Length: 333
Image (cartoon, rainbow, N blue to C red; front, side):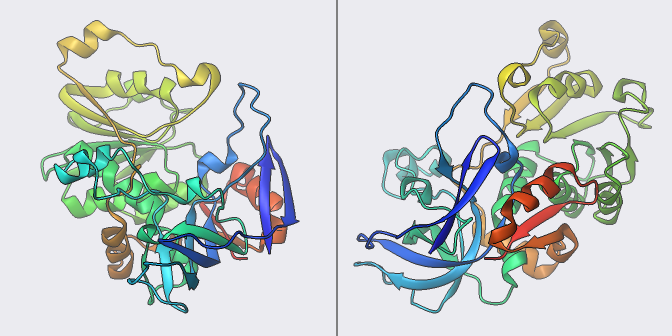
């Protein structure tokens, strides 16, 4: 079967053979795999190792290993990229988000930009009624659910989102469903499709920070909840804009110098701000994410802007990286 491997920005697709299944594992035919922003990153630290990639997966069960009883061949499923084990001390103390024995296909070294892959069966759960392109959105939607959960949005909240990528757009829809009073989105105007979707998903106003710096914007009231999906240096803007007692929830990732943020810690202290890091590994909201897609709380079809076959993965990555009309790019092997 064919699988993709990345080294820096170089992508190769090769024929490889999957090993036999171990106990508790499943072999999955990949029906769709979304391109995540992390798939586009190149680690500037000089890591030259080649690796498989792709972790937003919807597929069909082809085979199950010994001891797997909850799945059957032919069943359409989605995969959590990482799942709590349910057995460690933290899991048994209802702290699954701090699981010390995460179950993940990362440890099988097979990934979603391939025709088939191997995953722990615990990572898979049925999803028969959504198209694969929409179903694979459950993984990033689970991230958005965690981000919004940590922000503790209420009907009195004035929310600002930094970065209207797929996860940010999903967070806008979730914040609107939470009953947020007003929702503002900071996104560059050149990303016209994303700006339009932000308004469709419930934003009251979209602000281009290259035209109007956020600290110069009249929001008409205090911003007490900020969702940050942009790189760490933008946190200082969030701290500047946030009102006293504000909560900043953060999932941005970057490498090299952009992994660092410089800000006035005294102002952070005097304003009694909170910074809450969202890292949805293990994933905790897969079934809930499927429910939100199924109910139309998040319009998955509106998010999927491009579809490519596996053979055109390099072109798909370039599209996700540079096309201003790109929102969610999906590979359909």
